[in-house]
Image (tube, rainbow, N blue to C red; front, side):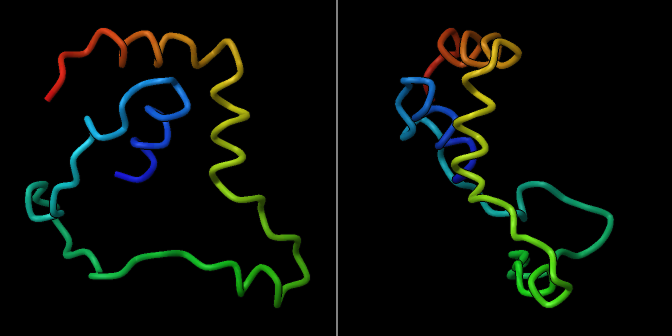
Amino acid sequence: CGLAREVFRLGGLDPERIRPVGSDRFPRPAPRPAFGVLGHGNWQRAGLVSLPPWEEQLAGALRTPAFAPLIDVARRAPCC
């Protein structure tokens, strides 16, 4: 939900059009953990450089011509 809202925000669209839903709405063959956030601690312990924040990487990607069709589709999509 956060990623989709950020795409809309960066594309000049209303991020409130994106509404969160529970994972129970999308049945999967295997149970999912209640909290599945990945951390960077293991990267640092291995001596690797942590990746930049995903928000920065997303903003850079959306500035490339490859993502223009995504923003166009979102603009044409019906609200709610």
